[in-house]
Length: 238
Image 1 (tube, rainbow, N blue to C red):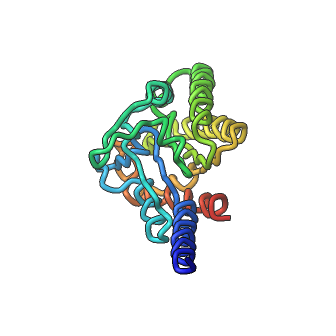
Image 2: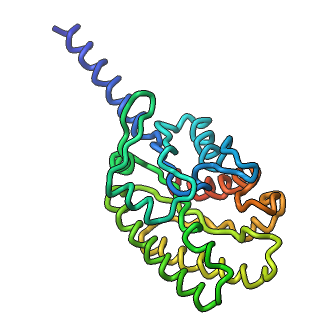
């Protein structure tokens, strides 16, 4: 009888240790547009900022799962919202994964969205641009509501940078991007999401080496990851 009791206690102890270990690991979900999908200035997606974050968690033996297949190049906030509402499905290692379930399970979500919504209008009349950005922010808020419905854990939102270094009116463009960032940051605070400011660091030309492409270089993606990891260390690992 004592032998059986000892075996039971050992099994229970091992199971408790297993549960505690699983609970400490991070289910990481990357959502958004081409930046979130890892597209770089060379037109490839070999190493995006979320891949660097994944490696950081993995190297610390803290990664439970990593999903970036819901991030799609060209996506706007309304596209991602539709995917969540439709409960988009993907297949990973022959297993079906739904977006709602991924959001529910996620301990960490990073989000890059909105740039595609207003970049088209940046050469318009300034008043029209700001009006449009305000409309975009309302769409993003609608997305935030849906995301928060399913994910109660840490959500980190990546801000915007000025994408056109050779723009004829760079100061005007910077002002527009700063306005969009201010609105996005305020929205993040309202929905208890973390905001990552990358505006100033993207004045480094090494991060945007291709004048004909708005995407960061691999070094730019790594820089985004470093800023995001600072936030992760202060929130999830505080």
